[in-house]
Length: 152
Image (cartoon, rainbow, N blue to C red; front, side, top):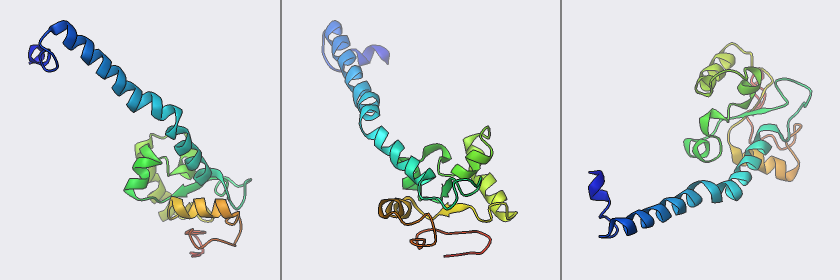
């Protein structure tokens, strides 16, 4: 099967190897290098804003960062590897990322996340950060709010 691939692009094996080398280099640039120099830093910045900006109490272990309950598409684009469970990551930094949703459910069930910053999605957090509201009671409609009191 490998030999058949040599004649895929050109009849001459040397030219085929050269063309495939250039295509591999172009693919590497398109898939890794260019995104890391452009859009990746924007995605990291937006996720960092959602995780640490406009929090109620920067001195509290539960309120100085945020867990964002995001859609599968948002998790794929912005927070792969369960990075949206950021409170849980701060509480248990050595926990494998695959266990973070389970820990979130466990902590919520046991009431350990009472008063924690938990948001329903990234857009609401970014709106609150852009408007400057969200660190206090104002602009909290997009947030789940304090788990123990069930604020909207």
